[in-house]
Length: 362
Image 1 (cartoon, rainbow, N blue to C red):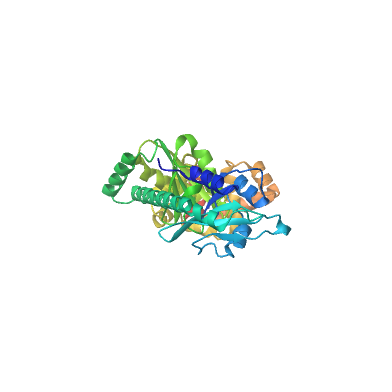
Image 2 (tube, rainbow, N blue to C red; image 1 turned 90 degrees about the vertical axis):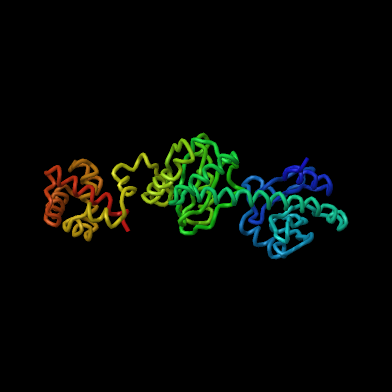
């Protein structure tokens, strides 16, 4: 029976008589095995946080482990409480997929012993390469579900169904960041499929565990010190519904503030962003008067707050922290600029729609 990665790490720990940790090439934890009670802060943090810090990564990579084809010894650093360790590169077809770390502060592991463990690393490299390829293939199928071509979407849905890769119903999530660098699939639950499409991260998550899995994906992106705008649509009963779910989740992400998650069901009139392009929406929601108003930020904010609060003068003045007479003066100025009457229901609707949609048009 083929060994899985956890079994490989346990065998390596037993073979070499040392605590072992397997990390991918981005220093995210894949598996670990104890051997005795030896531990140091680097190993502890890797296990607790499921990844090594950027400082640890930089420190270890200075020893050439990314290009190494054989064992590399990392010396101890007493100032950091770091024990000496042995790094065995996990490679397949001349590509490094990760690192097998063994705590070896007294250099009890001999070179011949380390050499005997290398076949285990090669086996781990094969498994990691295979899993990476399988996740990449599934990612491409997810991208095909988002295609504008119905036949491509149908074929992708059939392929994913045949592979048993997804459990429906699904939540579709769009995570928007400045950088579209893909998420590391090792760090997401196996039931979550992810791809990058039109510079957004798109995730398919089984409804049952969607909140926890989505929160994890957001944390991974936020660790890159990048703001994340998140939009979700749920449920998508079948894979055939994913395309429309993605379009709706994308609108929700577009309206979200950095660090915020918006659900399609909460968007109200902003669902109009799904129905037409920005130019068409601008033409149908804006008037010369509302365009003039938008050039005055204070007045536009006053009008939006007043309308959001259903014309409650007292609450609007309190929210804006201004005197009521100041508010009355601003409201008169708003009517002058827009040629709209705030006591007229249709005029209020016209202005409210224009102010609500405008911030989301490019």
